[in-house]
Length: 542
Image (cartoon, rainbow, N blue to C red; front, top):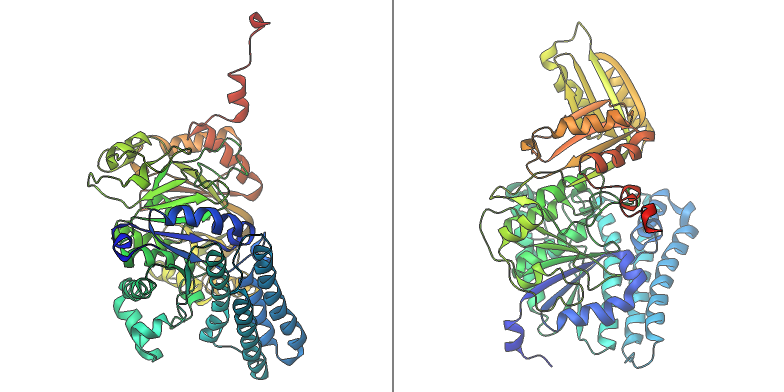
């Protein structure tokens, strides 16, 4: 058993596992990855709710369906009961599959099975009661959603303990009330008063619960409390990434790792661009932009937390545990030494790499000087299912109030604008197609009161991301020339004030071609055909 003194000398490391990773590779995670890292680190594991091959069949999606059934009333009672039963059976099957392997101490599994059944029975009673009134408050919905992470952590903790790695499930569903009291009014006031520091307070609270685990590995729920205005509404489905970041901040971790089913961040989506290359590192600003414009990288609030605490974040692949992955460093001008865990690129031996200064490591990967400027863009991404809305101001509408009225209507209908291009009497907006079609019709009617409105569906946003890209002379011309050569029409162009991206709206049918053209001509990464042609032997070799 590890002594308290030995534990105190080891660095803290936080690992977050997504639901699909846990659903597919629970055996690998519990029997290989976690024990390997726990030998050299004080390890914290954050778990999302278990999922299948797709999110639609995952626990969180099933719990959202349960909420819908509760709101539909007693007519959906059978469907509700079946869904809760399916959630229970899915978790019991996972536990049974893990316990079937020989040489594992499953004596405590009966208690876990009983606890899973008890939690699911409690959920069913709660939702059946809600069906009587036919609605659930946002905070009640949070309570339902929290069950997914709770069940996941119970199973992971039980599986680790059965192989001789002591672990303890840590539930955070009451962390908000612990930090700010039970009064919703006090919680709302704290959120408004503290802003981003609200999460710093939670990080301190989470740290206390982690340290209470002693020498056992804390298995922490990705769900971190019933927020004043609902966690799903305030943060969104990426809340488990934010929870992992708060864990890292709370214990001053050496590194935060987020484990996915991909090697890391690529220069483009490798499913769409076969020649896409894995990036060893990107800046936090680049990671945030890639997330916003279509790539599922990291929740922006997560980046805010680790940026302030100067904690590196690494994306790793559960299918390739020894891989280097992609590391994201908080923007800094200090020549800070990178920790040994952060600089290894040797897949065969990542246990004892040498320490490299941050500036040297970044320079090796294309980031120059204290400002980490790049000579070429870093990546290109595509955001699909976009609508282009063009509004021309009527002559009897005052131009100075035109933009105010347009954005007021967008806010009323809860339709955020991804890109905006304006003149005095004209505005073009690229927006995500709303899930509720009636919201779009209502927006169109309201905008037509003071302008002519045209809506073009089936569009995509192509975004080129690169740190300090505004300083790259000629890059805009290269992008436009590449698209012109590919005969692709551009409907809107926007260069962000962040100096990180240039975004263009193109037809959805042209998005893939645009992505490949920019990847080849602007990022200067040869296509597979070009790479193969370089190695075609001449006739003199025959």
